[in-house]
Each structure stands twice: as structure tokens, then as C-alpha cells.
Image 1 (cartoon, rainbow, N blue to C red):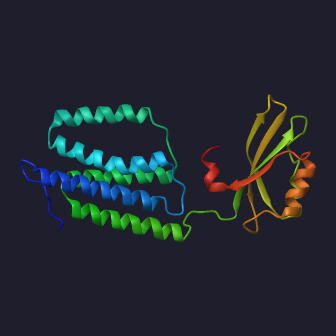
Image 2 (tube, helix red, strand yellow):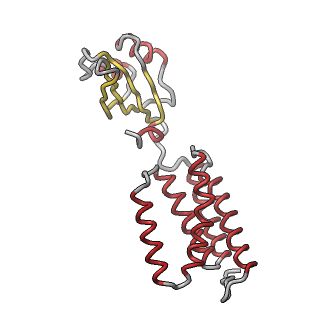
Image 3 (cartoon, rainbow, N blue to C red):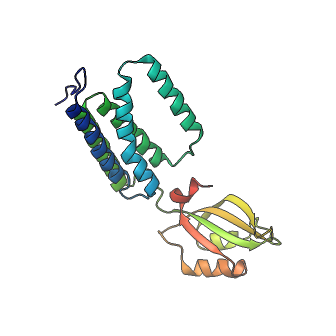
Length: 220
């Protein structure tokens, strides 16, 4: 099961088995990393195609140093044209690339074992909410540009026992408004409606938005 499937020269049946294995593992990896998380359709498609492409590259290189250098140069160009994603997305991409390399070397059994190990790890850590800050939120409050945002809502935060720290300040609407983003720590999972009403009175009934900290923090 753990032996290499490749022979020299490689046969059509071996090629189909390797590519099919890489495709199935890519689909399963996309499903695993989308568990309890958000994933765009483009990323899901990438996770499915990438291991197949990596497998084919490894098969075609097959010890050829010249091809290996050319492929490395191609990946360098792609790297500088790509945008960094979240940690979860980067982990998913590296996982399918590793699976593609293992499959391309002909070790389908090892690829399956590696996938099962990663899948169990991801699911268990997701169920345990590992690294998540459940009661930390991002609170974005819009105020007129004439307001002094320094300590403007401190009395409200103090009244409801909420710890708050400014994360970002941004002007909007041609500079007539200011968006102040706070990182807040709540006692529960939701902000009390009374606190929301007092903030709306304080900021002149302009926009007040609260979002999950982990989901939005990477965009700041």
C-alpha cells in the first residue's frame, strides 16, 4: 500500500490512477477546510485542481534538473502575482500541494494517510474552537468628522463592563465622516441592545456595525 506505483516508463493506467487520486484528495481537502469556515468558489476550485497539476509536474520532472529549474522559476512568477490569503487558506493550499507532490511520486497510500491525519487535525481543532476568541468582536462606529473620537464612548463601555481598544480610524464620505473600529471584549456572545441604543444616540444615529474579530481582523 505504501509502495511507489510508478514504473519506468510510466503506463497510462498508472497515470490515470495518480491523477484520479490527486483529484479525489483535492476535493476532500476542500471539503475539510470548508468545515466551519468560509471558502470562496475560486479557492475551492484551486484546491481541487492544484494537486492534480502538482502531480503532473512531479511526474514530468522525474529527476530532470533543467525542467525543475524552469518550474521553480514559473512558481516564482506566480508568487509575485498572488495575494496573501488567510492562514486557513494558506494552510489548505500547502496541504494540497503536498498531496500533489506525494501523488506525483507514486505514493498514493502515503498521500491518503497524510490527508486523513490533516483532516482529523483540522476537524478536531475546529470543534474545539482552537485559537478562537469567542467573545472578542470588532465594533465599527461612524461619527461626524467634527466629533473627537478620543474617549467618546468610554463612559458607555465602562457602564456595560466592555473592554475596548481602537484598532483603526478611517475617514469616509469625502472626509465628512469618520469610521472608528474598536476591538471589544464582551461578557456574552452578543452586544446588549441597550448599549447599542446608547452608542446610536452618542454618534447621531449613524452606522454601528459589530462583526467577528477573527473574520475581519485580517482585512484591517
